[in-house]
Image (cartoon, rainbow, N blue to C red):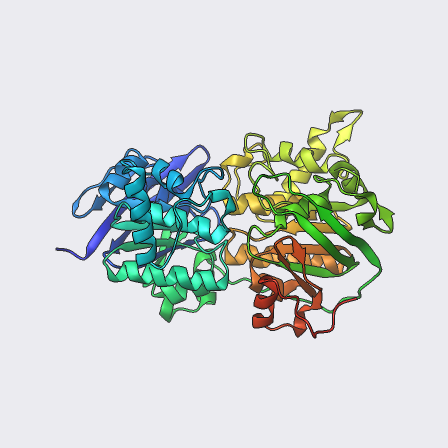
Length: 506
């Protein structure tokens, strides 16, 4: 039997105004972890959607197990032995683990038999799950286990994983990698998409690099530096963020004894949050997903009202003000969920500009939208943040995740906020784009703005933040100078320890 499991020849897919994939060809062997790399908009998502039966190619062929492979639906792909774990989980919070898994299976066994199989398979692969747990009570890492076990119950020959570590702690990443290496040893092929290049180097045997929809290179990650892989993706060298010395000014935002109940059934309530941010300062807030990050951003943006004195901007009580009034004062925000929260999918980019920038950027005239000014502002965002799009009339929902992220961040940064609160600023973007976004945040602080970066990427926080605090179960640790912290201390803080014995930031 040939070592080749999946062979792709000349796969092409075009949409109006853009060729997503152009004559892409490569092979995946049995028992191989194969990385698919490319900057945002390079065509990775379209390619795996064709493999998984979500998108029909315009031309080209696929061969699986030496036979023609033309899946017209995910059901057909799964029947042929292809499974996929998506970046965005498709789970129902109010249902149990077993109920969610059953919904994603084509021929689910009886509940008792399924529960037994979940326990057996999850234990066998080092991903223990209790079938009767309500999904809404699970951590982000446990939710990912549900998706993986749902795939493994169907004995896949090829497992596709899209950004699988974006919501995991370092410890959970190691557990996942142990599982993937076990699958590899058993002969399962894994197609692995990630922007975390050091993880690619540690895990993957081979990498295929896409650029502008075309295959441009291959490499052996263990023998290639992360920098070299990033430059293969971009097709050019790029600069790392430069953190310059800057003057720290007066306090801009102060949060005192903030307590707030989450509006979500399985959300995390905030408990006694205290911190302040000064002009020219970047405060990094780290934590594992689901520990109150969304609730904290909502309380700071005005989406969730609190007692007036709990949030102060330049000494003025604003806890009871809504988002529009806070924006007028200069307190801007960008939430983690870019599609549906930060941007309306069906609306064009310029319409999405109006949503948050109308008053601050003077996009209204006598109560009507000034479309010329709006278009100019949107073009500026697209240019400054390298948003890959056919134009400003393009619906937000048609952009790749990374390009939409660049648009959302750029739309807020170019409004010249006095304080910017941003959750997961580089989520799902490639190395070059992440470096660019981080530099823009540093530049914003250099101009005197206060910046709060809420992120699960510890490398990001260590690279750009001046001070660090950890969020755990809705509580915020004491704030410390980032330069004085070690990774193990940060890990303890994320787990609930407040780093006793260190000098706090005042």
